[in-house]
Image 1 (cartoon, helix red, strand yellow):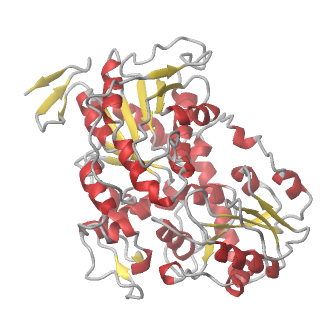
Image 2 (cartoon, helix red, strand yellow):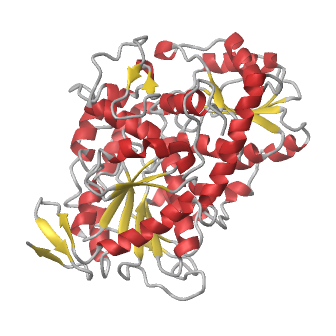
Length: 540
């Protein structure tokens, strides 16, 4: 690929996790009944050739447990689909979630994947029935929600103990730290998933392990230890959970210490929703924080790996977005979405509306607020949508020429796989690092000059950056579009037969199967135990 705009190495043709920290330790539900409900529609225990596979039948069983947030669930739903599509003759897949997430999960899974539902606790102040972060009525409830997820410890352990034999692996989200000990007690490997790239994960881990003297905004760029020379970050790009890691008054830091602790780095391996052409330079830095032999498995983009995916996201378009795009010229529309987690103030929405209109480009804008009204007439070439948007289909549409995005990693993957450059507008967590990766290193986007402390970006800057994103004639724009086209080819090649991600997924399964029989593992109580093929542990 051509060199990126800052001269840093671009993506190669070859071939996580300082995620945001969280709340205080919660007490396990030791006195609660471990009620588990298995939902198995017709065919739930059948593989692709129709042969029955009993749930929990041994080292052919993979248990997947996503964190209850749409951006965390979707990649692991795609993983489950990819595993059953490519390894269904050898593996049975079970996805664990809670009652309020069953319908969403089932709608994104083939019938060959089983679902297990654990009862979700709703301790005050969480409203009853709120079982996903995107449904939280206030950002202040994020910490209580994390407390509640920690209470799933006992029901999950009881589910694993109910299986007739240990599974091949437990693949679980970084935030569900209790799953590592539960997997160890059950005689299974835990593979940790974080929704971040190797780039962002390795930076977060490196800066948490060796903090710079100061994170004062405006400080000179920070050189990241044990990373390639071109990797530097600004202080304001470091996630708050990393910068405040050692702050005893930070409740998210306490949650991280008490509920996650070393469960991440003691996992058998780390699953990364990325591919080698983007991220292989940062794999050694990430793997260095894990135990001997642990690997980072780059298996993405997972939505592309989910071959034969029948997700309704491809068909459902209740707002008529695709039909509206059909009437627009190729490459003429800028798509705008800031995801499901970030809160955008009405003052900022006003500035965005003015900037989009003044840019002169048609736009399709997904707005979460149900109360805000645009302060300007958006005209026939502006479309504001408040309902469901089939984002992958929108990005793949020929009329879309660029994506104004918060730079959540899922959105970055979707944009690059569609061959669309990004206007990076990061807001929370590691999104600022993703913006640097996208714009400054890969050269497949441009950046909004986000105000320090979250101030409002004015309409003139919005207009300027949208024009820069959508400019099809300038030399810089042509280079950016060439690089994003190369990224699209690399993403598709990665998940194709023999591609780096396809082979990584195959190797992951085969390596897991080889690890049982004579491997010494450190159990939940720190006792070295040998794992036999039948799952029985023998203390040494």
